[in-house]
Amino acid sequence: MKALQFDRFGSPETIVLRDVPPPVPSPGQIRIAVRACGLTPADWHLVDGLLADRLPPLPRGLGLEVAGTVDALGEGVTGVRPGDRVFGPAAFDGPTAGAAEYALMPAWAHVPPGVTDEQAAALPMAAETAWRALDDLGVQPGELLLVHGAGTTVGEAAVRFALHRGLRVVATAGPTRAAALTAIGAQVTTYGAGMAERVRALAPGAVDRALDASPTGGRIDRPDRPSPAGGSLPVLIELTGDPDRVLTVSDFAAAAELGVRTTTEIRYDQLTEFARLAAEGILFVPVARAYPLDQIQEAARLSQSRHPGGKLILTP
Image (cartoon, rainbow, N blue to C red; front, side):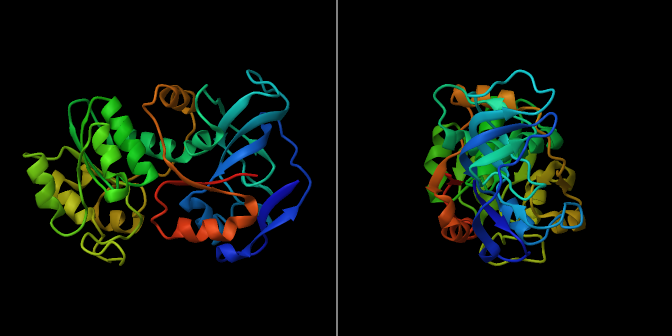
């Protein structure tokens, strides 16, 4: 089968397309014929050497979230059969991962009717991160939540989940997703200098909680330049009045310095719920563009630009 691999750490330039044997599912796993694989910022961290001391030796595969058709079942697997359409996380601890013609999955849910493979492959990590962040932040119905970086896939998923849970939402986003966020019920303003004043104008009174879904290290006045002051986190603390009411999904170094919450324990126990919400149109992650496997370098450049305009998908 065709699969993307890297056999040394570094930039995405180390990723190559190769012919390799199809993976064999272990007990509790399934194998799928991949129809779509979502790209995430975590892919580039792994290529750069993240978890290198915890995973088997190189070569390793690329791609952490997939959708496709069940092809083979590992021992003990029930509730699914060959031919079923499924989505979820791809196993990435072997020589191949999700960006391949076949991939292994340790967890999955059925793709609901009306949801395409590309749309399904865009869901797992953005939805899981957003759902977990809201849980760990302790949001309650009726509260006012500020989602900073709502134009990201995680940010938009958080906005959608928060509105579904009965919260009021103020969101910061650029022009690409601002209209879509307004249409689903958020009050939207831009980020950058003066953001705190604009948020207060939209929602007089205290912001109950704030979620930072922006790329790591972005400055409030110059998002293109990192800041040792913690990027946007001091402004979010100012608006909520308490660092314990702020959570970031990315800026961990600044969070440790400022006392802001973080969340890192990935769990995929809500995949079936994500499928239900996607079927009802409540959960939606915009897909910006799809690439064949042999265009991984072009896809990587757009992904790492931090302005992909939505989810990027690889299609074997």
